[in-house]
Length: 55
Image (cartoon, rainbow, N blue to C red; front, top):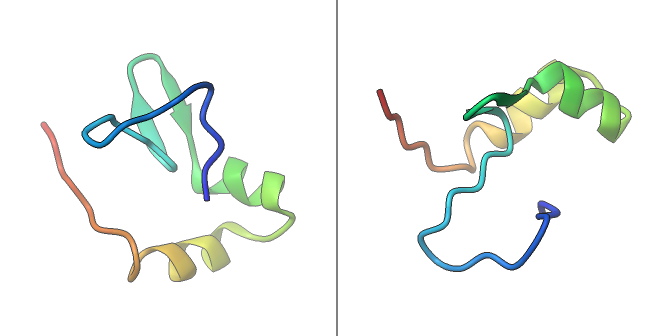
């Protein structure tokens, strides 16, 4: 579950880990907020989250 700054609708971008514009959040930062380690988040999220790669 992600907390967003406002309402979102289908088609809106939601970045849990990575970069969007000038902002970035790493697995290490997210792990610190969640009280765990980055490797645990990687192994939990990777198989369950569909990825969309953009250049």
